[in-house]
Image (cartoon, rainbow, N blue to C red):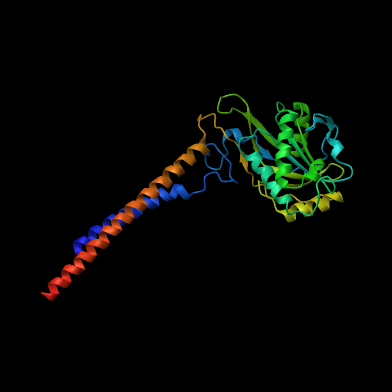
Amino acid sequence: MMNRRTIRGGWQAAVLGCILLVCAPLFAQVSGYGDKQEGQNVGDELPRVLQKVGIAQHLNQPLPLDAQFVDDTGKSVRLGDYFGKKPAILSLVYYNCPMLCSEELDGLTSALMMVHLTPGKDFNIVVISIDPSETPQVAAKKKALYVKRYGRPETANGWHFLTGERPAIDEVTKAVGFGYVRVPGPDGKLTQFAHASSIQIVTTNGKLAQYYLGVEYSPKDILLGLIEASGNKIGSPVANILTYCYHYDPERNKHSLIVARVVQLGGMVTVAWLGGFMFLMFRRDLHISRDHDLTKKEMDKG
């Protein structure tokens, strides 16, 4: 009986060790919603492609209000058309982004659902594409998606999805302190952008009042920021903890996030297999123990 228990303890310890080894990568955080950073790090150094990417908080910096864009209806507009009477939330993204931009807009929309102010009446939402190849038609589809998600179609006139030429885009990104670089997509063509994620609160007279970094935003902070910006008050810098959007690593020619997800899936399958194996082994041990007990009782009676 002692030998049997030793053998049982041996396989159980071995299986437990395997599970721990598999679960370590399985449950580790792999580029979660708040960590879309890719590329190899050397010590504390960022991947080379991200060294020109970041957010410099230019509080009290005026936006280029004369910059020309095209709105989601195809109409030519000035950035200044959205200021003068109301503050605004500014978001710099690109509409065909495969990763973080949608999460940024998702986070903004979710937060605004809990902000008791009305887009178009109390403030404007201005979203500008950093990709000069994107069209008003693409912008219109993206706007329709988020107005629908917001659930208040009557506020559509407060959501403005803009496209523009490179000079106008550069004027805005320089004023905001929004650093980004064009990078190759999976096909090797320069169709994607590496950038960080943030939204900006802008005063009624078009000055940068507050930055909120990441992809999840506090409704309370947004409300307070809009109220202060409506009085042209400038906020304070926030901790510069950046969330990067960078899908493709041209140096390794791999999609690290996709590979990591495949590894996680393989880990889940392995854990499921080990779980089934342990169930069968425990069941077998239970039968052996019962048979042993019955044999012992028969021998005691004899």
